[in-house]
Image (cartoon, rainbow, N blue to C red; front, top):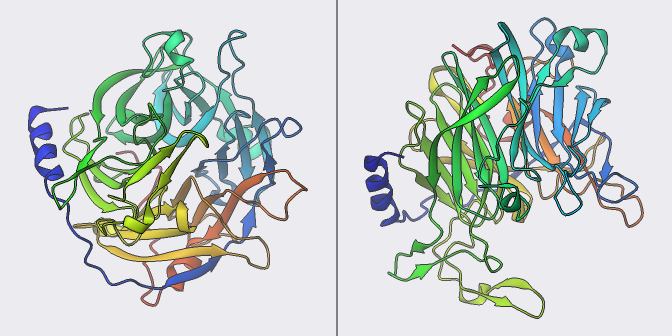
Length: 440
């Protein structure tokens, strides 16, 4: 990170802008399709759905696929009808004392030059092994109904954050992930579990397989100066710092939006493969609230009775999944999962990213609602007859009906126009101005 960026960051943290918007009602939305529930137990293969990505088929968009992470269980690939098309297991532990692979976040890179051919990639953060894993997407396999993903991770890729394998097993490892392209180069931003660090990686062709190198690193704050002059750090277990997981990059403007879970939503410009000064756009409601750590229960306890009122109005911790809806001439939206109150906040993509309103995905005729959502992604282009005006995909942390005591999770597919038209002043529906496959 440049010296000028660090100077600007210090200045930005000295001032916390008070929220100025009037509270608005949460608008209701329902999903149209859901994927099969997965279960985080031995019988279910320790599957826990987390983050989705959409690959848009260049020939038949209605044949596009959804790729979802399942943490220790790896990846699932789905059709737009929610049917499972492929399962990929996470890597096994390399030794008895080592952690197995655990896939947290996934994103898409279009047109990466791999072995002399333009190749679309699914890029995944492997929290368990502190690596970035990469899978080539085969359009011919999609068309033929065959499993479309193939592992093309370069052999011997190094840990992203850890200095060695012993440090990997301490699990302060790769966590959130967001990808973007800049001309002929492809990058991923990764965050670090239980730390404030973000790392910018440039993808590389290593003999027909995909590796990466570090281009830049940014450390977000772990403590904050409040308007009354006091210092505050977010509620956390001992040894943990306020982490980021949900992230997305504005593909046209090269701006990163990152959710620091117990803090709020950050905006960070990406310029010449460098992080610029971060700006805190919005804070969680719990921001600035005192807390204590209960050693007997081994949990952090927030003292809501003494909340000083320095928090925001639109996000309840944890701030989670982030996605960007691209429309023409810089218009569009940034969507953030407000996990604490089971809603999604919508911000303007342009200007100062003003808050526009919130929505919740409730029970509908075809699916149950969305609870405690981690990851999400939105696509503006038509995806066949079922989603002719684009779609929003969200993780559901409580898939119902439940299977006894088993905890089920899955993904919900919602037509974008259902979200857009739910607002009193409808959001934009623009299927023509942005092509997610266009990396120029």
